[in-house]
Length: 367
View 1 (cartoon, rainbow, N blue to C red):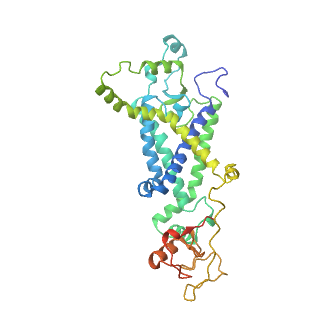
View 2: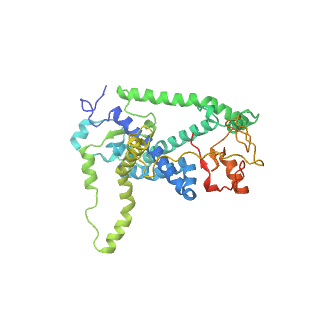
View 3: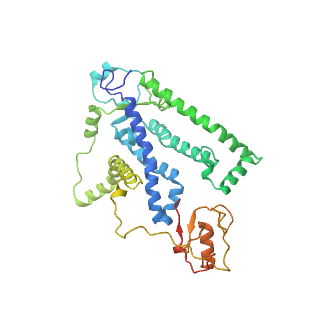
């Protein structure tokens, strides 16, 4: 059993902890990218809102080019290359004596087109399908506390599941069996990890058997081959240098991601912590504009305005439903954002006090 790879055994075989770490790095890329896009989408919704709404498809398309480049160039996925690992075409028979006699990296270990495309199926396709299945399960009301949904959303989910149609039956079946399928898949991965830890299998993931590769450490021979494979004859002349720069710029950009993306993830996590309520920045920060602006004072209602019943707390006076996305008028009265926005666009005034109001004066309330 190999807990640490530097204690005997195969020195190029990575430990389970290295493999788990590289997999966790890949899992951090998607939420970090989604967070950045969500922030910029608030300022440029015209260009980025569709990208955020289709983030899984956008991320899969982006990682298609990234993973294909790293598999073709380095023989490893992006996260595996970051941790100094590679994918090797596993030979039918392990001949350590022959390897020691010949030296270097055997040519038959290089990934072929078949292994590259099979690897991309599980590096990109499988996480995409799992993310879409989880989103659909939550859209059906599974795994989420129903108290956070408004009444209209709960009614929509109930109608979609209670209809006596083939689609409704399939939705009910999916909502029932998905947790068991997901749990069974996680147990399958756990058993595979334990078998790899106790040297019962050379494959960290069970599908690597079908792909035909195993994961190894990058050794000295791999580094020597990478250095010797780089072109040594640089182009002469300005036009030749510009042409070479244009051709190699996509490859240089993709290679630089191994440094830029982890750095960006660390920076984003730092900003989340720095601006969180428990951050010491809250105690150190002093607003240059003075104290916090108090909430608007509730003005008296107009006799001909919308009557407000103060006993019906949390109810929108315009739609008579529970307030969704609470929004305050400059007069201090709170309604649903959609109701308030539509009323101001049509009447340009507060429905209670009948005082003039504009859309830019509406303020959302964070509860």
